[in-house]
Structure formats: structure tokens, C-alpha cells
Image 1: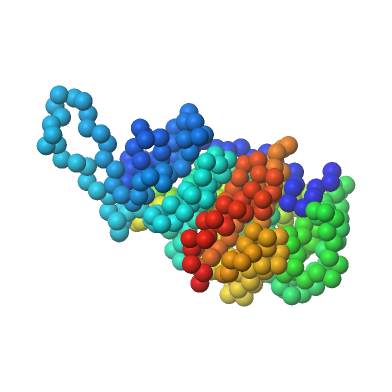
Image 2: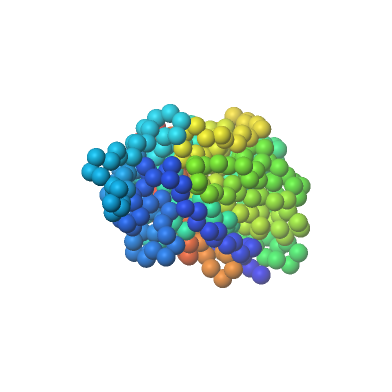
Length: 382
């Protein structure tokens, strides 16, 4: 089977159930009768913006339900207590960035966007339709951020060391190649990352063991933990990177496929960890007990990933998306799941990391790119 760049067959990833928010998060949502909320009724019309936060209400403003028609209800009944705006129990959403996220996603019911503050893991905006927080789907080439960090940490590659990008790579009869027949015989690893070369990474699989990527993801990125608690009553999936079971599986994992299961929440976190070097578990509510990673990335690795993501946004596969927008680093990704394709893109600007997933998107750049650019226009460059 021939597998092109960023359109690769992997294990079918299901979109898990949506978990309703607990009443403690009511201050972040509209009342159900308004047809909006962080997570809406599964029977809501896509045109109603299922699963999004309405732009018509401040995400941090307290919401009071309409009074009951019961005879015992009086006009002097005390209103519900407003949610705190800071400290334990308060929402992390930033109204201006929440509005920007809603504007960027618009009525695209197939898109999910999660953005967080890279300094502390606080989720600043979320329009998590479909698989935003609880999805378990292949992340495609966006996961090359983790793969590259592993290879850099082990000294297998250096950013500017020569790492050829051949036209094809064959693993036990399975042929992988690059989009449009791309070949870069004199490429550096930096160029391989920026242009999303599959074959270069696949040909390096022999330098790691079947369990290296899984263990690295757990140690530095907080994945495989099944321990993230994002907010009261809010379900999420932490991301799964299992040990590879074969050479073909390892080859697929190198480029974000195989049995990897991620979502925009975990991929925004991956960006934040890679760029800052330190894992901060994402939260929607301050004061939550959070999961800790056991180590921080070497400074040289986080600096390299940051600079290579900037290259991707300025000279690589995302250059057309971010043309004229300074201060952005990015990584594109498009994954095949069964007979479908999903579009991915992750990026950072200033202190904000963002991930967008578009179910059925034909490519990361075309499907997720415009959404991320629109959102990041509201984020100042560092």
C-alpha cells in the first residue's frame, strides 16, 4: 500500500461520547434553552453550533436559570451566586480569546479548537465540537513534534544535520512516500520537519526501540496517564501512545498514525510542552488537582522544536497560511482514518498554543489553517 505525505492509513479512531458539563461550569455556558454551551445536547442541529460556546455571552459571566413556575417561587428569591473570577474554582477562559475562537470556527460543525496558555496549562478558549477533549483519533504529522523531540533527545539527529528525505520508504512491503513525489536528498532535519517529510522519519525508526516513543511521551508530555482532570464534570481523554507492535506499526507511529490516539486538547498541550520544555496539564477550572510529568525536556530540544515550528510557518508546509503574520510557529497534519481524511494543525503565538482538528478535512493547511490564522490574529506576537 502506498501512503502519501500526511494522508496515511491508520487504525480507525472513534469519536468518543460528549460528556455534559457539571453545574459548577454553568458560569461558562449559556442556558440550555439558548442552544449553546461548551458541550451541547447530542440532538442539537449542527447549524446551532453544537458543542460550542456562544459568542453572545461572556464566557466568564455568571448565568442564572429562569425562575421556576412553581407557586413557591417568589419575586424576592435570591439569584444564584456568581462564579468566582479568580482563584480556585474560577474559569480559565479568556473572553476576548473565546470570542476569537468562536469567530474562527463559525458554523463549521466538523471543527474543534482548543487554545491554552503555555505558561500554566490554563485553557483560554475552547470550541470543542466533535472530538475536542474526549476524542481518540490519529493526529497525523502534528505528532512529529513528539517524534522529533525524541530523536533530538537521543542524539539521533541535530536540527541542521543532514537527514535525507528520499522519495520512498518501504517497510515489509508497505510503501510510504511524500506528497507530490517530494524528494530532498540533501535535506537537513530542520527541512524535513518544516516540509513534513515522511520518509526521513520512517527511515530513522531503527534508531529507537518499539517502546521509546511511548515512554518518552509519558515521561515528558504527560500522556498515557489517564489522570487528567480538566474541570468539574468535564470528560477528557489524555492521549494514548502505546508501544509499537511491529516495524510497520513503528513506521506509522513515527508520522503520527498507527494506534496513536489524540485530540485537540492533548495536541495543544504537546505544543506547549515542546516549546516551553515543561508539561502543564490543561485545566478549565483553577485549583484542580493536576497530573505531573516526571521530567522536563532538555533546553536544547525545546529551543530546536520552537525554531523548527517557526520554519514550518515561514518556509515550510504552513507558509501560505501564515504569510504576513509574524511570530507564529506551526505544524501541519492530515491523517487517514479508514477511508476518510482528517485535517489537523497546531501552532503557537506569544504565550498561546492552539490546536484545530477538522473531521473530514482534506488537508491540515486547507481545512484547519484558516481557522488557526483567524484565531491567532487576536493573539499578540511575543
